[in-house]
Image (cartoon, rainbow, N blue to C red):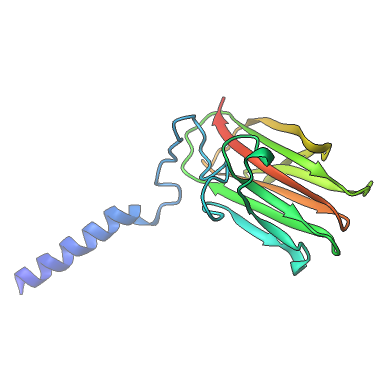
Amino acid sequence: MKKKLLGVILTVGMLAALTACGQKGAAKATPDANGNYLVNGSFEEVDFTGWTVTNIDNVTEEVNIYDRETDCFEGVQSLHFYSGSTNVNFTAEQTVSGLEDGSYKLTAHVQGEAAGDENASVVFYAIVDGNEVKVDGELNGYVNWYTAELSGLTPTNGEITVGVRVTTAPGGWGTIDDITLVKE
């Protein structure tokens, strides 16, 4: 009986240690070799590893990983979007938890065409402590990269959600690449 009770206590103790007793943000975020806290920020994985991509109302005909090096800001792959007969309307988002106290900077790059849509929108954003901070991107033509930056992101809860929202009329296309979240 004592052995069984001891086994149960050890098991509960190990589970509590492994799960940090349910504490939010218990795991420390770890940057890559370049200081980027985002997973797959340059979209070099064969899928959207690290990202939640939502094709709103399933209208965007193509939202995928593009492996054409000429359409990349960095590396050999990027997030590609296009719609010929329907609107482009999607989001890509990633949440990083376990960040140390301090100030962070979001940087992202986009290139493409809005197909004459004067109301086209590319918005890069960060959600910090429940508040959204955003910066507009621009579609200025093929490989005319626009760099968007948000600095001074200072979470008090160790968590930042970053993302991009894109809307254009039919015919809109582009690529998004090399999104970074680094400590300032």
